[in-house]
Length: 453
Image (cartoon, rainbow, N blue to C red; front, side):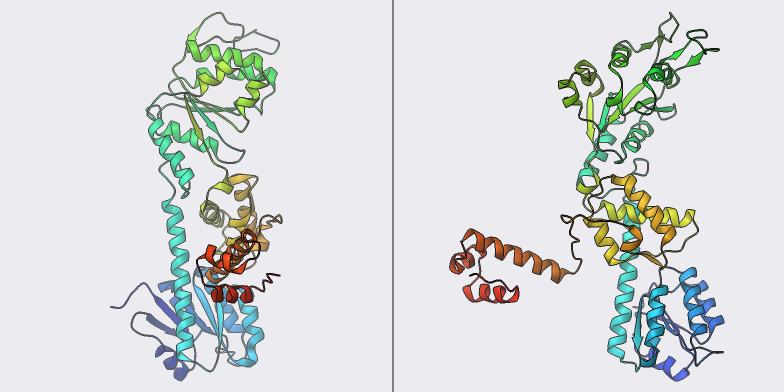
């Protein structure tokens, strides 16, 4: 049965070669042909083929390549996810290399070998399908929690906790490194609570000077101090009926911690310069990247306040511990900034994906977003490559290969080395540990150039 979703556009002006190319493929692929720039561009706009084979020598410049390069550029602009295979003669290899630099997927040299061309085209279709699946998967992993994108078990566990805690009024403490997205979790708690119609008021305790933080939180009456020319309602009071998010609560001064503790116990506030206790119905969510237990030991954070704000504690794991999330987030950010900056990119090169997976991400999601934003703007091809990302790996952050054979070889060599170390280079004992015969172990030693002496 013909799969209408697999469409191949053949751009070739020679009728004989056009027919030869057609006959290379079976009915599982829908074939569309074009003989010049006008028809090629029309087909690209109308059918958006997943794969295109393009002969660069087209009329009115059949002996050159100018028209072919024009079509290539238009195809990359109109359908950036399409895989474009350049059909070229042996003497035109430099044109093929230039086309790859512009964003073509691959090139194939004449004369036509049906089996080999089928393999190249099939591989292009499969890569297009995989990239489409990755994009769809990334979108599907945007959980119901306000756009949080995750596939790792650690993050999904945190998301499930949010879903359970959100309908309650528990005072919640969110812990995690800087840049992990703690405020997104706080917003998710608000959005999925019965207070979602109320306001979500956030205040960063580390960003406001100590002298001003109290008035920001509790407000003040007219004349309370020099410059207080009118009454001001504080963040706590303004969040009545909604949620108050205290970010970086670990940076709150001790003097103010006592006043916050009193509010949490009595659920009333008193503005600076005022004498009236004002009841406030608000849910409090706090977050910090600091170790509050250590701060309690150092007497820089109140232990009684800690127990008040941590009726429920949620840990947001750092990006380096979220297996697979870096690539998912990278695709989501690329789509976001492509739309924002009117760029047409189809994804990441294999080297870029390997770099994304190997890097430790000390700045977490915030760092990843900044790198993808820059790479989206600066990328010259139709894919973001490792150089565009400007990722500098430490010696300990060796890029893991994507090729399964390389992965298997690396694992086998590591296992052999461990067995030899544990057996003090006794081949018989090492083979027994590995569960293989001595001849098999000797073959592996030869394969990996390991000298047991």
